[in-house]
Length: 257
Ligand code: HEM
Image (cartoon, rainbow, N blue to C red; front, side, top):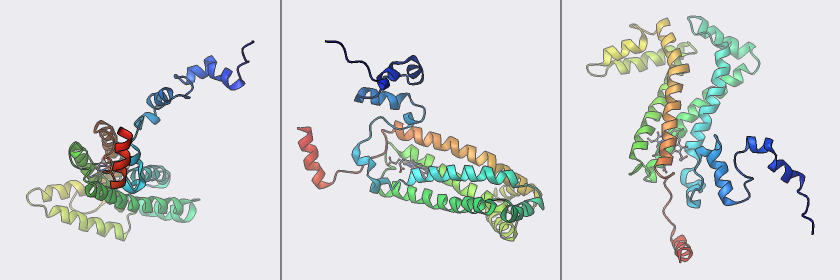
């Protein structure tokens, strides 16, 4: 009997064009499905297999992932704001007024950036609380906990440096109070305050410093820190898994037998 003709889809899968794009066979078996994850730039960030218990929403509440999403929203809206923002005195104040009154979606983008910033501080803190309450900071994850503390500090610093940029009364006095607090640190306080301000009081030099920190240095540092954080989650054996519920122990033992 003659072989059935291959379908159009089968012929596409065998074509050299398809094979030049996708390096593995069509993923119709678990082995090839694993290869898809391993060989894709975006997908290989995820482990090939994750214990079902670890995907339970009520374990992580997706708080780490939501923090990443907020960072992406902040980057996107931040680039939009940079198109219009002028980092000098008094240009900063007027460029924000102009953005809010004359630019299409200007006020919307500004509000989105501000609310996302507040939400990120809150969610990173909640993520840390979840990690603490589930004991996920214990070995072998203690190093990643410390990386996380670094990420928390960077998130606070991004929020704080962004606060000065509108150059309004709220910004000026908040930064005056904040830098005075840093200045009261024993021994090194005076030097830290001068370095932060670029002088003895909040002025144009402070604005340039904080703008550079806010749009370049701190986001890059956060990206490097997050990359180490995610890489380390994989090296620590994926995220910690919740302990078995009592009724699950029975089914687990049954499966093992
Ligand atoms: C920019 C800030 C942060 C981002 C984007 C982030 C992202 C993530 C993501 C996506 C996960 C996977 C599990 C989950 O979603 O809960 C995770 C796990 C983890 N994070 Fe963070 N995180 C941040 C800050 C922190 C902080 C402040 C701490 C603690 C001080 C921390 C400690 C940990 C630890 C120990 C794990 C492993 C948890 C486990 O195995 O159950 N992270 N993080």
